[in-house]
Length: 155
Image (cartoon, rainbow, N blue to C red; front, side, top):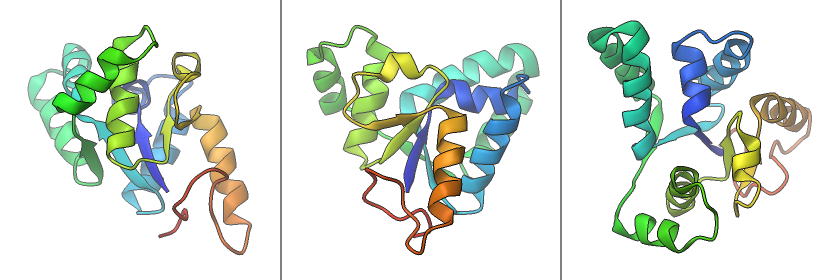
């Protein structure tokens, strides 16, 4: 399964945001282990850097982002993605860019703590806890997959 990690989930891990860090660790560990294919929006990486460097400083932030990019692929934000986002009826432009970038990259789902911001998205969206539960349930089946996803959890 291809999962795009929203900025808030990545920041939960990097900034040790309690009580959310545990779910972020679990999900990003699954991406690191290859149990899910992890993605992050290209536009979101700049936000992650901006927010994390305030707490961690620039050099540690760069090191942490480099570690994440060893197992997270970056979805592109190009002119087509921006044009589709501009035409979207959804008001939160940043979230629409995330959705459009995810769709253009063939991502199956987005994991975010701000689920309400993505309720009109044409892509499956989960809170971290919901995705953990769905992955656990799928792991108990003979053919592990998430309902609505076209790619097995363990490709």
